[in-house]
Length: 489
Image (cartoon, rainbow, N blue to C red; front, side):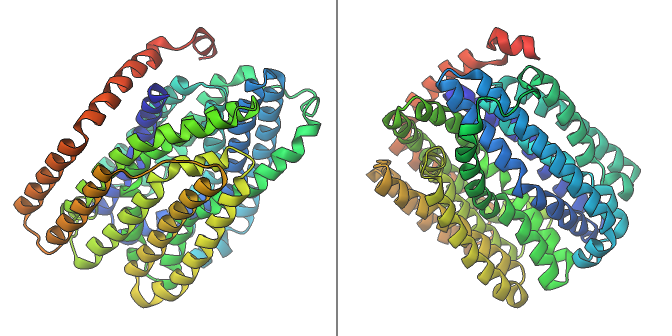
């Protein structure tokens, strides 16, 4: 599994770099209000597809994997084809509606009509992207997904560089659309052998109820995940009436997206893996997969969180071009909330991959309601800090709920050992010292001390994980792709 996680991580790094580089460079080249309007419009057009596109992709990832585990490949193709048709039709209708009401949407978001119209195609393009990206995993085409991310991201950077060199705001709006067009074209080509539009319902009518149940609860998960990410940006701009604050908040969130790479990579691989065990009736084996994934994830995320905490002042300066007390506090709050959510990705994925998805969905929904209350009250009063507090609360609440629910329902037994608790305590103590001073050399010294403590406590475990990682990476490298994958690409 580690080899697939590495390929996924590389792909997500490439994808995450597009957003990170775009926000970091555009806020320096153009007015902050211009970037704020782009991100508000993008968030709106990325929020709507979350009601159907990632949900449909998760249906494919889970049930295609289950059917393959039960040796029913025809059902896998039919579920994929039916989901593809539903996503394409819904995206087309949504895009037309957005074009018809573009004037009202522009006034609602307080975004220039020209920017809104240029980004409207993202409704369809982003829908297709998140659906097909997840579908790659349902059919174990991870190496092909990596190639697609690299090629489409190169196109993104090409358009962005041209816009920066020409100092063209109009061209700076188009990198996302160009990337989406290329990704969709390649994804359809890579998965062309899985399309089966004739008799899509044949043989799966009895399974549609389970698919609908999963679809419904995954909507809740999407809204408390990516949905809250984009909704927070929209509400920040709307409730403050200041696109500049929305720009800094969006830059903050996008800059921390790389922090999600390891848990998202694990989750992308774990969902089809656990689903295959679930389809074969091997429930305990699925729980064991989630238990084995926890220790290395905890170690990796703890080290990243610690370094991010101790070098927070420098990170904020690099990503936003400014370094204020408000920005550093917002950064640390969001970072800590993400840490708590990300380390508990294995129990969350475990619940999502079984019949207990409703448990994790209702927990996420409750956390989202609490977050909306914080945003509604906190953003008008505290601006950026209110936005960060709400998002940090959401992430921490979701992580804690997944941890407790998995232990209670499925007897998941991931644990914090004494070394992990000692490392976390050291980070908190060193973090207090770091935040009280802006000295670069002090921050570097504290980070070096933390790394020394980390490897003193966890060096042996890290060495074992690295050996396994190297072995599995070689086995799953693009040059070692299965023949079926090579023929499909």
